[in-house]
Length: 342
Image (cartoon, rainbow, N blue to C red; front, side):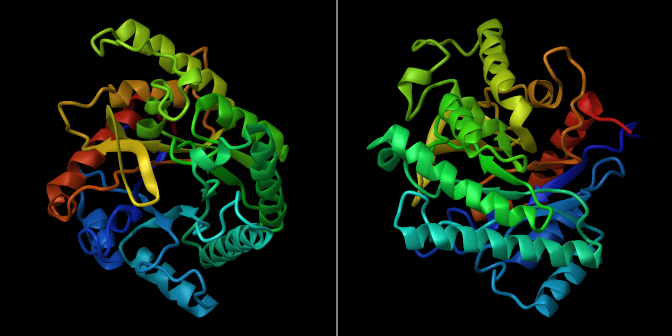
């Protein structure tokens, strides 16, 4: 029996979409993702909810309020809540045109409205809206100072819109997004936004790559010839990154990484999410989650009410196997056992 009731344990729906498509495998339906999440159970413990990617073909961001309520009813019928939402901002890159940036902000507004309807329904009482710069590190590198200001300006406008809905925005720490492709750049961007409702979404897989300096060699922390068996050096590196970004962290993904990059389409050179049971995983997931969930003194931050598993770009044969989700749930339970509360 588990002693802790918080943080709530969520699964993500977007692994059924991300990396899928015409040049890959077909997407896994929204209904199937919900069914497998609801069916997962370990020692009587089940997932508490899902985080939603507001992305076609699962969800139409232009859904009417009645359509959103039907989605909420469907999720609730599985005994699940909704946490964080992913805004579909990639049609409006922050480093694109003025119209692109207007599109970005409008997609955030639509996502906030979606969240408002879910809250009124009763299926959502916590979570944030996730964003990123929707632009590449290569584009950002053409003018680091000017482009950081441009990303921050766009985020600031989005924050002001989100504030009208009492929503917080979490910038995803993933190395494929310009201005958030290194831990130092991420801090610079967040500081430049200068809004109380901006924060950081830490993903254990993506943030591990911050230590290796992919896309930002100047911000690499681990030595070039790093031996992954050197746990002391890895711990010191994890502490450096988490000390810098933990104060900003308002959304958290439990994940595993094997220390290599992987990507398809716009998600180029990004964190290779591994299965919870992957023997090549470099993280002690349950232990290392504590670097994010506890402060430098070891005290729980309780900065968010739920944690979510994120595992993208796995084969459909893996994602449609129920044992996969039971293994993931087992890992989340271990995190909550070590770093949870009542």
